[in-house]
Amino acid sequence: MDPLELIEELNKILKNNKRTIEDVVLTGGATDYTNYMNLIGQLASLDFIEQETQDFLQKRRINVEEHKDT
Image (tube, rainbow, N blue to C red; front, side):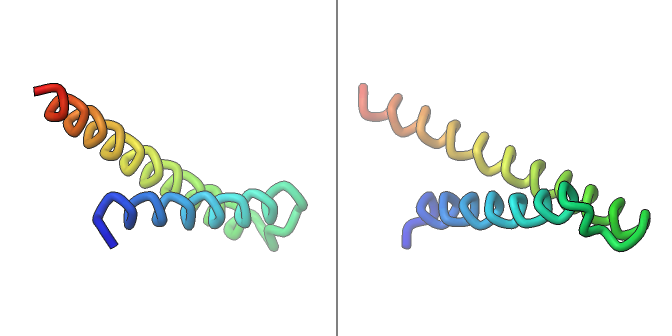
């Protein structure tokens, strides 16, 4: 598997994990405030990682396209 495919697969996993946590939060599945804050922290972390990987992929695609033109 090439590194870009790996990152794209990682993004799919991140999105699925985010959906799962969002479902728990939105359906009142947090057991207490501490659990709720933990879930919100996990969502923030997953958002950050997802954004970083998307930025990387975007930069990589731009670089690849620039090199194709030359």
